[in-house]
Length: 370
Image 1 (cartoon, rainbow, N blue to C red):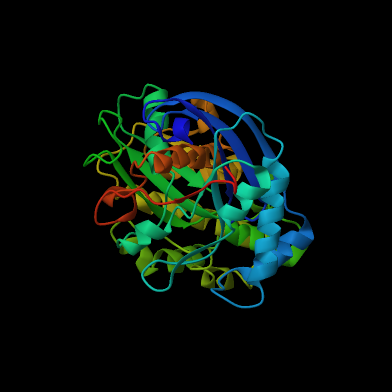
Image 2: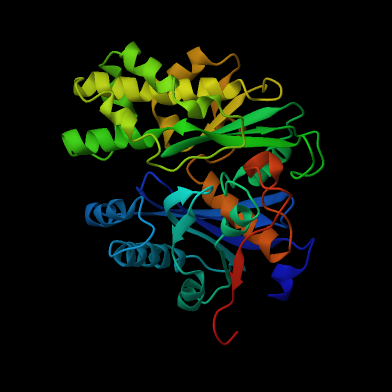
């Protein structure tokens, strides 16, 4: 652990992320000193089976009760399966699985035991990234923005850019790369834009028995119901000033708005809602970004990407166009944040979560006997 805690030394960190889309676990290696990006390493993916997804879905929105232990077991076993396959790693960042998020009420809940995982894989694990932020008045989300700042520096950006992550929930990070540190005033603004892939995934799973609208093919055959879209945009969330965050199920009522529509029209309308939420979010950016770089599963949906291109006043590009990996960016983010936690550096600030002051969350667990 001496190397891991020594500031300025580059370490090989492995980050793991299981998002609200519930498709599986991403893991990626990053070489970093907790400030800059010094190299990208190997990565991997472990899909959740249909049975495992069912167990996880049953735990969504639950703060306690009988659905949580089996869901925790799924999370732990899937992560251990994947992470054991990586060698030469100094530190692991383990996000766990968010099942409930209400920072101004009950708090935030991620399933998974980092101490048990450290013993299982024999490597120090940083986990419980969000609790300290929530305890200091923050939203506890999003947490990737500090890594987005490092990415903007790595790609040599000299004007503000925005990173748009379209997973189960959408979130945006506005970055001013001319600032020195992510926690500096004006360096970052980040918040959730609204629902992204989750409502469409839930719709096609319930109606058609498929996990997602691959390539936007179902939405491409439909028409957007503008009345439902207008009702969606009337939600008070969009008028709230950022930082702000959402639980996966906060917009569950929106699915009811498309109950009477055909499969194609419903998928098209839910996809348009995601794009409209992003367009509303852009109004909160301090200055217009020079480009919007899209990461997460939503960038694979050409219908959604076209809707964004039409709705936004700047270029919309997949992050691959600047040399980043949109499938692994969040896993890499938790590798990066793990190093910062181990070195006592902040991982969130007022501009990213609304926390009262820059704070470094997380717990470091060392394997027993080491």
